[in-house]
Structure formats: structure tokens, C-alpha cells
Length: 128
Image (cartoon, rainbow, N blue to C red; front, side, top):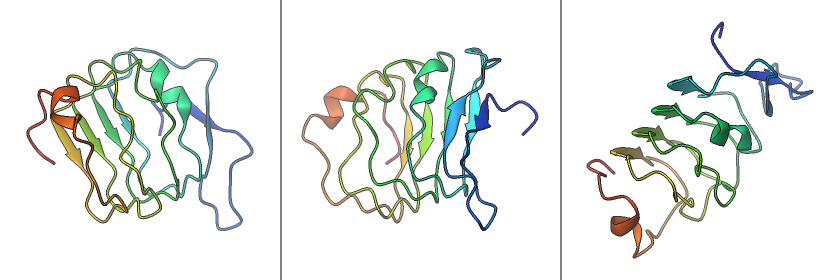
């Protein structure tokens, strides 16, 4: 994780898994990829919205229950996001600001319904 722009913020579990992230003072908004897979995060890192050039977000197999409203407002270039294995997420996330999103994977996520406005909100979505 040499290029990771987040740091642990007293967020290590007794098993050694990262479960919370905070923005690093040296974080760069030029980061294009963020791999947060398999970290057992319990809260969605709202600092993601500070990565204005983010194009790919791997966020699967974490323990978050919800994604905050406007979590992606600062990510207009986001093209690919994986929420696979997010079994605790029951509601479809607020994806406002992600009009470039082309691939959204939700395999084994707890989401049961897709919002009717999803197609208008995500005009470039090709893979769900």
C-alpha cells in the first residue's frame, strides 16, 4: 500500500484487519485507483470523496452497513466500483456525482431493490 492515500486511524481490529480509514495529510486528489478490499471496514471512508480523479474503487468484502449520502459527490470520474460481499448493506447507495460509472458489481451484497431513478442517475452504466 505504498501509494495509498489513507492511514489507519486507531482502526485495527484484534485480528489485524483494518476497519476504519482517515484521510492522510499527504493524500493526493490525483489518485486514480483505490483498493480497500478485504479490510473488514466497519464505516465507509467518507474521505473517498476527496479523490477527485478516482476512476476505480475496490471496496468488496468489508463490514459496512451503509454508504453515507453524497459519499461520491467528489468522484465524477469514477468508472468502476465493486461492493461484492457487502452483505450488511441493505439499501442501494446514493451514487449522485458518479455519472461516469460504467461498472458496478454488487454480487452477494444485501441490496434487494434498485431505485427507479438509477438509469437516469447512471447513464453510462453497462455492467451491474
